[in-house]
Image (cartoon, rainbow, N blue to C red; front, side):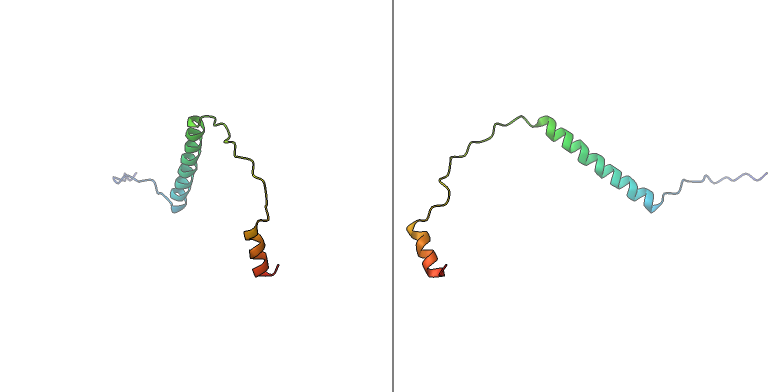
Length: 69
């Protein structure tokens, strides 16, 4: 029987490295999302003043006249 004195190292393929990087990135994104959602306190919606909507003022009429709408 022949004894091999060299130890065989496991071969790492490019696919294995890329798969590991992809899984690591996905895990980091999931962890960041969980941390953000845990830190976020419920925020009351900011009430915005009621706008009067569209108003045709003198300025708007003048623009319409110049643009010939």
